[in-house]
Amino acid sequence: MDDEYLKDYLPGRPKTAKKYAYSSKPLTYAALPPLSYLPANAMPDAKSNGAYVVPLERFNSSLAPFSQNLVIDTPRVAFDSELPAIEEKMREISESRILSFMVSEPSLMSEFHAA
Image 1 (cartoon, rainbow, N blue to C red):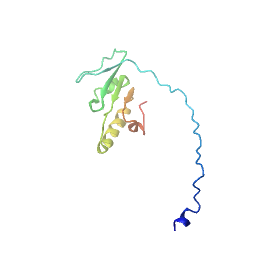
Image 2 (spheres, helix red, strand yellow):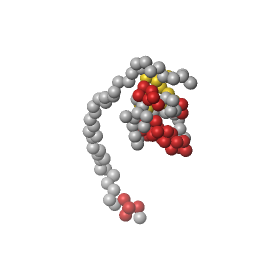
Image 3 (cartoon, helix red, strand yellow):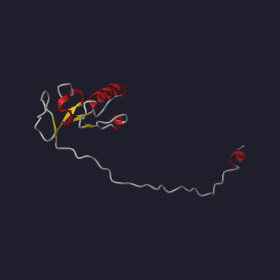
Image 4 (spheres, rainbow, N blue to C red):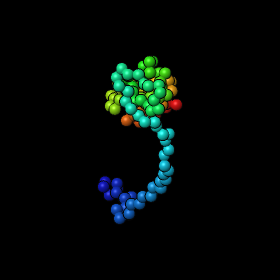
């Protein structure tokens, strides 16, 4: 039975692989202004030439007028059961046309982006 199974196997035959040809190019990103974390219960300074980092859970309608100067920080760790709520909140926030999201889990950005 082993002989029948192994009849097409050539043990001395060298294995070969194709070389992977890759190319790369530098990625370009829009420059971010100086960032600072917005203290709890504080409001952004409208005259600031920088941007403020705000945790996702702290974004609310009172911050919406400053949205173009906000970088929203998403949770560093999220359980699968929490992801739908996080993604929904990100969708809502993106409608405010924020400056950017700060993500440690890139899959959170798979469906949309801040404009």
